[in-house]
Length: 224
Length: 244
Image (cartoon, each protein chain N blue to C red):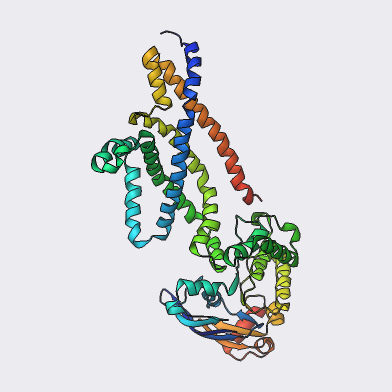
């Protein structure tokens, strides 16, 4: 076995780091969209709007029940054959769409459970002062549910960051794609992918620090 | 002026409220007493639609609704004429004491924030909790939380304040301060409907006492009559049990 070509690896780091904004950008965009969608899905599941409920149940079931990679291929390679509007969709957009839909299904269940965990007294107090349902949800129930759901949601964000590497399979040159290209020239596959792995790892570690900070912030109101 | 006619509600086929008729004059303080499970709390909760009555007419000020087919808009209007004080305080856990009081003013009544804040600080001063304005409920004692709960209800300027056993969940050491605050509320000639087991307090604060059993108002009158010369045998039995 040959030793690692450390010099090559060090030289590769700035190249791969150059793709971090794209990776984080895709993950952040998908996270924001997924949070909004998941909150809507969760609220629907809590209130069970009659004509909508079965559609939401089906949506969640499908996107939890099929692999992300299969969903991405369906969107990027499959749908444009059926819907001509989508022919112009690029890999980045398709990846963001896929990540959004996939993770919103998981996050909806997390948020739903958190909403149902908010104490009954909070709902009654909001109703008693004459709040509308949407005021009650926005100002009282969802903020309290967010605190409970936050650790799990951050875990999904971490999964999402790692999930962006699948955009590579849609022809997007992100961290993984860049490493692949570099390695194809140098034949140093192990070094190239190790650099990618280490950079992912470092990003997730940094995020975990942020997670701890966020939890402290969210728990401030509940300290005795 | 509050008027209730034929208010009825049942849980699983058992009538909890059995055609309640009740008029309350502006500024009147009415205390509801009676054994557990006789519909006292349900009566209060029905007036706020926390429990939905099946039948009956409710009129509070200019809002009048028929429970059988009340619309969401009517229910909101009714809730905005009433203020509710809960047994378990039910303060918003994600809001400070001050924000708990401001919440309804800003969100529901549309009061500008600076005005709402001034009002909240005034109310907190009146409840003796000026120094707790920025404390979250979790860091307050039970008595303090309930005083904020009463403050939240006071700030609404509601036509009717409903108190659902406000001292029942409190450690004995905190009961006195909450009752003191309720006396102060009463001094403002606030219309109050109070469910309580504090008979001494009822005797002292009430203009009228209602005795409920089996979902009905069995006997009512001024406290001297209810406590001094009860007529209905069920009320006599209830008072006798209490004094034992």
